[in-house]
Amino acid sequence: MLIKNISNGFVHPVSSEITPASVYSTRRQMIRAMAGGAAGATLAGFAARDVFSQTATQRPGKLAALATTKTAVAGGVTMEKPTEYKDASTYNNFYEFGTDKSDPARNAHTLKTTPWTVEVEGLIKKPGKFALDDLIKLSSLEERIYRLRCVEGWSMVIPWIGYSLSELIRKVEPQGSAKFVEFVTLADPKAMPFVGSRVLDWPYVEGLRLDEAMHPLTLLSFGMYGEVLPSQCGAPVRLVVPWKYGFKSAKSLVKIRFVEKQPGTAWNKAAANEYGFFSNVNPEVDHPRWSQATERRIGEDGLFAKKRKTLMLNGYDAQVGSMYAGMDLKKFF
Image (cartoon, rainbow, N blue to C red; front, side, top):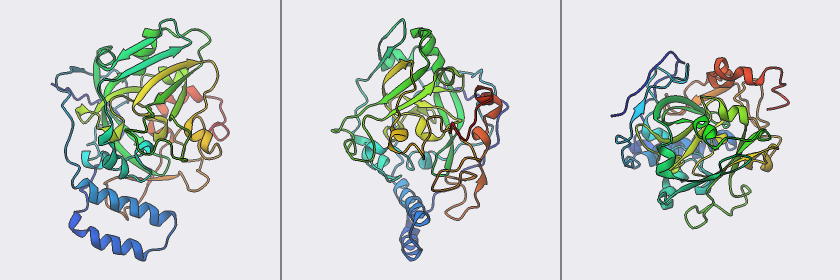
């Protein structure tokens, strides 16, 4: 039985219903009539996700056989209802399956998640390969309801299933020279139709400073909404770093490497002036092409809902802010 842990945390709004597919044709006409540019692209993305979500109701197998425990992470959960599953599973960034927000849910059925291994290597005393089942059994699974804030300005509230990445890190015993952790996503062009495109340098790579990776809020996740991860959301195992923009939470992990120097990451290599290595949620540091001061909660009140203010470190400042004491967060963005 899944045990949902609720402790004193942060306030999130409740997701509203998806717009019915019956009105989609009218919305498409409205979008065509609007001016082009970023606003039009955003509205088109919402509309595509809305209509696709009507058919994306099938879920993978239950995690009920895997015991969960209460989380000891103070402030790591919220008392509010999460975003609707149909929203969270049909509006995704996973460029291996396409660049439109509805592409991953449409295309990710080709991903084969069994068998699956994650190789852990680099500056550690106990390197090795973990089969997925062994990785799941390494520690008790917990349910944690975290915010997810993406750099484009949209956000969700998702109940993740997993455990602190620090459990794995302690097991492999990093050497004193290990300062960063690099995360590598599967890059299989047979299963992932956009691998090989010019959008990014493949495979998708992300990284954290070691203290960030060791923080209790950093989650190694195997599921969401009480079930295994759907493919479009990073199955079968992904990272969740709730105070950073969503692209830092690498999906479909196949390798975790401990290194001495800051690793080159996918989006930082593609556009360093837009995607800093740290990419902490910060309303005071704008993306070159749009403000980060506000955000739109997916499923909240439709296309024209009033945006809400972005919270420093996505609302987790009290838990993680001390790691950045004395840093110039505009320089190290």
